Length: 90
Image (cartoon, rainbow, N blue to C red; front, top):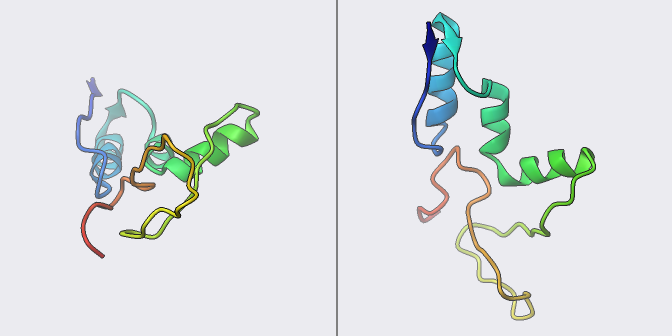
């Protein structure tokens, strides 16, 4: 038998549940290591760039920081790491 894990990708919930499933049986889907990598946008971009793939330009900002006046637009603002809830006030 296989286990298909469906869980939110924040707060480490998806990776944690994948670990649970893998510890007692066979996980249908990516392994825990890939889930953890994909949960961090910066690490994912670095990983893909090292593999020779083109990735979108990105910049890291502190939570609740304002974008610089000269920041190029259009832009997408999103949490880097979905293992925690980045939208909460720090």
